[in-house]
Length: 157
Image (cartoon, rainbow, N blue to C red):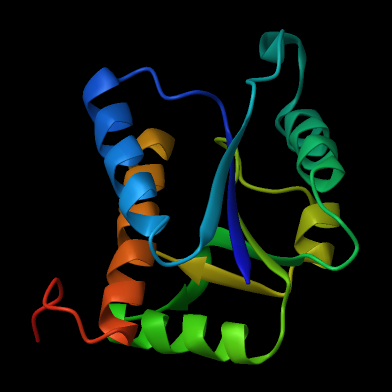
């Protein structure tokens, strides 16, 4: 299985980007992983919230193939412990999915079209984090999930 993370907008903070790069490299020892950044939409001041979500949604959906399974990182999604998330990853791998795609939406979330294509939603926390931090937290949790599945000493119970 391949895993792809799609996110809107680049990471400006060099320290965060260094950590994202570090965990992305670590993750590559377990699975083929790609982080795909969709550039910020230009002239958002001229767009309503729903227009911005629609434009972002079109860009997100253009990155998918028909066989991709789409999971949204969404504040109203299912909460997992790290062990629970690793078990969910194992189920996805066992199910024969070729590419599992996770998406971090823009500041207003996702369009209805993106929600309708999604096969699930995951929440990282009830708290709100910056989109840049969510990338780091999610990639670290992917890495942690694979170390749990391999019984490696990274995660402590």
